[in-house]
Image (cartoon, rainbow, N blue to C red; front, side, top):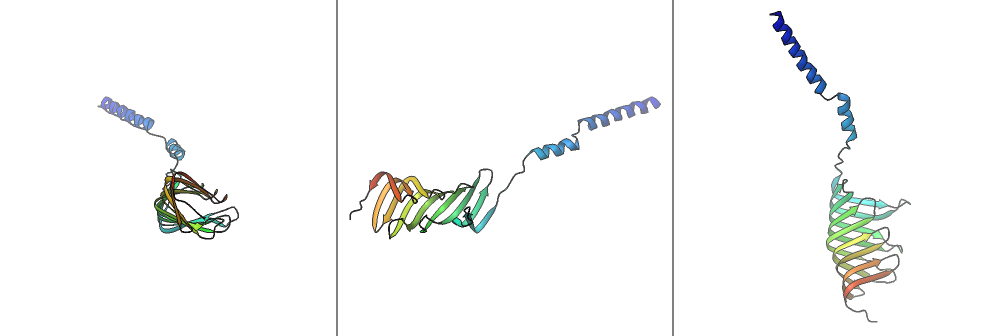
Length: 186
C-alpha cells in the first residue's frame, strides 16, 4: 500500500512540476504585453470643427463636418459633409464644400470628393471665382488647388471647362491641364 501511495505521490509531483515548468512566467507575459503597441482607436465626432493653426497661433484653415472619424493607423481623418475655409496670402476668404473629405494628419493636404464647390476671390480680380469638380485637393500650406478630374471655372460671368487644374493662389496663377473649352475675351 505504501508503494502505491509513493508511486501516486511521485506521479502527482511529476504532473505539478510539468505544469509549473511549461506555464508562462508572469514576468514574460507582462514583457510581451508591453512590447506590443496598444491599438489607438482614434476619435470620432458629429457636427465638429477642426482648426489647423500656424506657428503664429492663427488659424490656417478650418474644417466643419457633419461627421469626423480619425484613422490613426492610416494617419488620416475622414470627413462627411465637409466645409473648408481658409484665407489666401492677400487675406481673401476661400470656402469649399464637398460630400466627403480626407485630411492627412500633419500635412495640410485636404482631399475633397463628391460635388466639390470652391469659391473665393482670385488674387488680382475683383469678382468671385467658382470652381466645381468631383475631386479636388487643397494644399493649405502651399495654397495650391489641384485636380486631374474634369473641372469648371466661372470668373466674371465667364466659364471655362477643362480636364485637370492647378491653381496657385500664392503665385496668382491658374493652369488648365487639357481639353480646355471656353474663352475670355476683353
